[in-house]
Image (cartoon, rainbow, N blue to C red; front, side, top):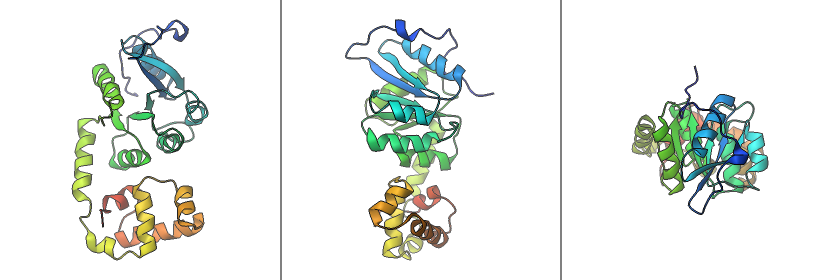
Length: 230
């Protein structure tokens, strides 16, 4: 069963939601589960200082609407129907970098965690979090902090402890291969990397395969974990 954050209650009528004042944090929700999405919205509208500005079932809906009517904070699921929440974050940050994004997901594996953070997510919380933990995380991310589940935070610490741990492997990369790795570490999409380096997508994929082989890794997250300042 999918974890259900915030207490269950009858979803609020958004047209009757109280008018926000200057201190109200406007929050948008990107979540394909109707029950979770509606209860999150109701819980937000029932909390002083918070308001659900908008809600979306898919990344595509969110990307079409959020740049024109931006909230302060977005709650983003990862497992969306078509485009993933991680790719949604990457594209949203490219057009509206001031929006703070808090990932709210059942996934706690390091690959998704680091992919989300590299894409531009500002915090990462698991759906098993309590109501108060979630509400506090929204306030934290709005203040410019990076709230994370304790398990996730430990993974992040371990990640930074490993950065640069294998200099011999990174040092064997060519100049172009290092440029590709640097762009991967910045969370850039493949098309953006190709455009920045002035190469085709297919050429870029070839470089990435070589980088993975030389670093003895199989994913973007693993490659970035071996990348350190040079």
